[in-house]
Amino acid sequence: MNTENISLFYAANIYTAQGNNEQIITDAAIVVAKGIIIWLGEKSTLPKVYDSVEVTQSFNNGWITPGLIDCHTHLVYGGNRADEFRKRLEGQSYESIAREGGGIISTVKATRCSSEQELIDSASKRLEGLLAEGVTTIEIKSGYGLDLENEIKMLRAARELENRYSVDIKTTCLAAHALPPEYENRADDYIHTVCESILPAVHGLNLADAVDAFCENIGFTTAQVEMIFNKAQQLGLPVKLHAEQLSNQDGSTLAASYNALSVDHLEYLDENGVKAISESGTVAVLLPGAFYFLRETKLPPINLLRKYKVPIAIATDSNPGSSPCNSLLLMLNMACTQFSMTPDEALMAVTHHAAKALGIADKQGQIKIGQQADFVHWDIEQPEDLAYYFGNNPCLQVFKKGEVVAF
Ligand code: NIG
Ligand code: FE
Image (cartoon, rainbow, N blue to C red; front, top):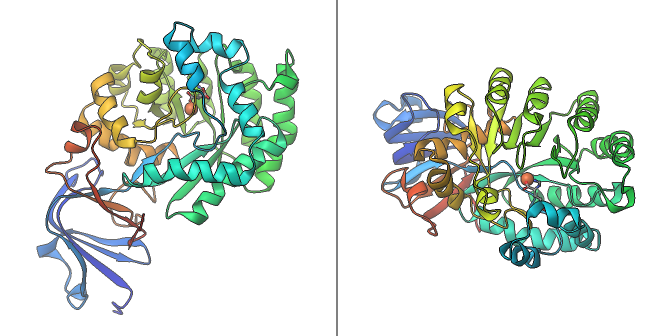
């Protein structure tokens, strides 16, 4: 066997995110070829063929986990909404700010005024914050352009980040995020434009890996979302949905009927909705940053999600309105303190389940034979420490496809 292009890592402790009896492996070895894990197990059982391979690196202390995955972000945008934060602290609601033409629409105005380069530069700073905490894959949504030119600009900026950083980026077209001002009182016309112009164009340019929408009183109705989903299906794109964030619209049930990869937010999700997503294998993406920053009090139905064995992911939802946050580690802690998730559930939520929410669970999110060799070395005593500490970054080193990532 030619062992020339093979890397061998020794690790005192690995959290694999396999969720089985191999969840933790101690005194382990990982063998990597062409960026893929080709062998994993206890060092003492390493096959003889690898005896001649020089050890690339030994992690004698701390823990190795899969690279973290932030499966729901709006990282690319112009401007900032600190003024609305102040208004909300004075008592105005998120919905009423949106109805006055603020909210998402104020970010649409700022994003339309930004050049592609400005969007790349501002998103880069946010991305660097995520990468420094061991994030190796992120999803980025459009949805602050709301016309063909500006949705394309956002998605191109998102794709460009992948060329600049050692990160995998999944892009999602969220053109049905809000009604643009030029379509006031003509929501159906806008949905028609999204279906007949924006979605086919971004798909034709290979700028979208999935399609999302905001199903809400201040967003779009289930009937409108259904038109978006039909178009996505025609184009062969998987769907996701911002659902049940501020009220129960039964968006999750609709999304389940389209085999959505994920439904996201879910504070108002009821048992029927949980059953529906359980049957379709849809991931529940919870967003503790938005829950916290909007000072919500209605908790997502964690116990029902557990009862129906729905995989739960968590993400930053990084965006200027409801979650101006670029720390996935902080979300781990908040998922536990606010939603009573266990530290292990929270870790699965930013690894294997986050990969599922992006439709890439066969390649990423676990330390397992056949998976991409994306992993992080942490200065921690046990995996729970990643959820236990907050405002603390114990990331020592990040590996993407078996190569150390400089940041
Ligand atoms: O995920 N809920 C809708 N969309 C974003 C917020 C967008 C914004 O306020 O700018 C979210 O919370
Ligand atoms: Fe969001």
